[in-house]
Image (cartoon, rainbow, N blue to C red; front, side):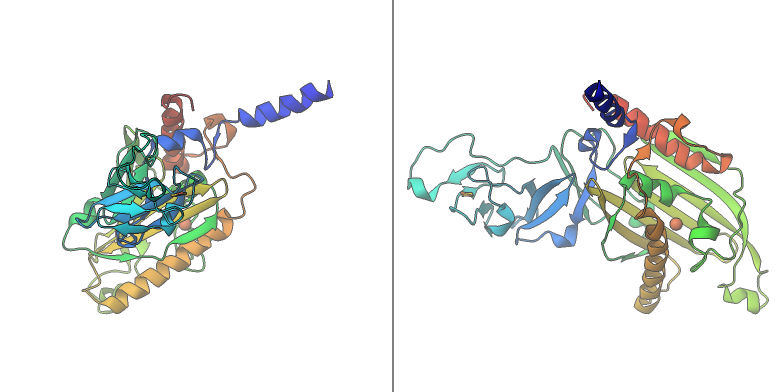
Length: 353
Ligand code: FES
Ligand SMILES: [Fe+2]
């Protein structure tokens, strides 16, 4: 009887409809593995969904990604070396060609017949998008994320340092889409003067993506045009959130009176059951090419993200609830409700997850 009770509670936990970092469905989606600049002819290991991957670049610039495990004795291939278009394992010197097929086993001498099982295992999808390498361990069911502003020559890009934190990727996505936390979580940076009330807004879904936008008035204390008498203090601002499942987010802030657009992109990597790696970049068209102003913008954004992480790293349950009835929602939460709907559909549509 005691056993069946114990089983009952663990079964309940296993059946909970939350999305943790290692939910099996996430193997069927694109995740950033690293920045493109981190992939060179020196093989390097990156962790994602509890697995290590080795990434390196061939002479012709092509990126190769495989599991960081040699099929011989499972040594980390990232300790090996690139030799032209091949990779040599550091342990017994086996050599693998650009497709991961073993072409040399030194211990067998020249001309030996090599087992067809001597080949590297790779993810189903490898792609590059705005200077990041993305992989999908199994056939991807979500689109590769893209940032429209990234292609616009009027915008300069600045990358935040990669952040690693205890967190749930689903809850962090929830946080970056949330519109009601600014005056509370961000009181130390930009939140103190922000309106507490969230205006009504619409969310438009398209497959595993959505867009939500609203315009509101705010006090633009950073606009020099205010003290010069060119513009009033109270100005209009448009916020546009773009989401791509599972954990890619973009927020564009357009200053409709003073001019200028600030874009922030967040790409969240579920590393293990309680760790997330955050890649974040800014695209700005209002800094006049000044490296100093971009550095200041990056430092400010780091401070903002640290405010978010102070909360997010302390959540007891590191899962995003996908059962809409499990939490209390308001009309201010339309983006984060849509996040749950999209991920619930994604989980339901992926086989055996
Ligand atoms: S473990 Fe790689 S060659 Fe033996
Ligand atoms: Fe925030």
